[in-house]
Structures are given as structure tokens and as C-alpha cells.
Length: 191
Image: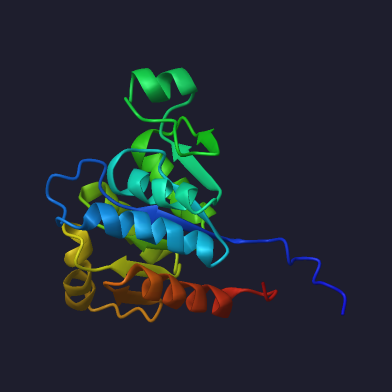
């Protein structure tokens, strides 16, 4: 049997979460790392905002599993990324310097991914969630990690706009499986 001409393609899964994690659940670090490892185990590429905190931890997990990571930076250069924004460059295989500051970076991050997974977050995480929501992207919420991740279900319920492309779970492995199932429903070509 001839392999699909698209068999080399991988799912791009964005991980959204707080850069400052003082409010996150005590096990958020381990859950973020496991989320990154699980994205790689399930043949995904981890995409994040090239930042600290929850997204950084997920990239650590992805790299521990031998995966590929892509960061989208709010800065326009590596120098600005490190000096002005005080953001890391490690655990990233590639960083795209968008030059669009945080709000523009958030838009590019969510739009460049096949799905978005939200962990412990703050306002920026909620912004990435609402962009993905409005764009009708598959979204996974890693509940039990703290911050906005644990508020989203109630926000969606109170917004009176049901969305069948949002899945919730406290287990990173199960959540990634659910998100990939949603991605597969969206694909024109089976990967």
C-alpha cells in the first residue's frame, strides 16, 4: 500500500496558559509537562507563545519526549524577545518573532494551530481561548490546573453560546486524545 502523500504531516497543538503561575494548582507543573509529553506521544507538534510558566513547562515535557516545539514570540527579534520581554529561548526548536506584541501574537498562535489546549491561565489565556472560540477551533481545557482554565466551563455556559468543539478533562492523556478526535473531524485529508 502506498503511503499517503500527507502522512508526514503532524497535528499542531497550541498550549495556552499563564506565564506567571503563582495562582496555579500545586500539580500544574507536572500536568503541563505531561501535556507536552502526551502531545508528542500522539504525533503532535507543540506550539506555544514562547513564554514562561505553563506553556514553557509543556514545552519541557515535549522535549523530554523527543518532540518538536514551535514558539510564537510577541517580539520582533531574538534580542527584543530576551531583553525587552524577558522570555526564554530554551525548549524551543523554532521561534517565530512576530513583532505583534502580545495581542497580535495570541491571534497568530491560535490561528496557526489545529487546536488549542488551555491550562492554568490568566487574562492572556482567556484572550487566546476566546480567539479560538470565535474561530471555531477545537479546544481542550485541562481542568483542575487553576486560574481561568477552571472558569471557562462556567463562562461558556453563561455566555449562552454552546460549542461542541470544547472538551474538558483533568487528565492530560485523555484530553489530548479528545482534542485529536476533534481535529480529525475537521481535517479534509486524514492524517
